[in-house]
Length: 168
Image (cartoon, rainbow, N blue to C red):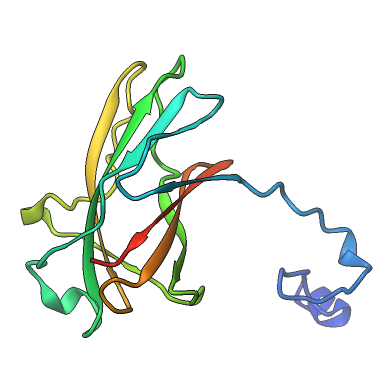
């Protein structure tokens, strides 16, 4: 098998550039992305069956200040997800997938976990039919207070919500 990989140039990987040929690689459908503001109106996804909303961003003081880069701004918000589907909703897909701070799409906010402040990440338990869950989300972001921030959060494998606000 090693000899085959060496003789053929190895396996196809996403970084390979095949130009117009494309090496017959099929792009997966990109997720649908809806927009809202931190602290704004709820966003409905999955044909209105799932509702997502957040509070405005606020600053906070984490217990462990070594958990993020010096100069980053700790940000806190609460997310509420309401399940109007006909089955329990797994939250395994909920994650920040992109951030844009003052036009810098390379800016990365670091998730902050702090049990003493209730920052335990996304709940493990599925949201029951007709139920809702609230959870706190902490992150440390580069930038200056008042800078515009867009945070795109995957809610399901095919749906994302982009929240816009200002660093607190």
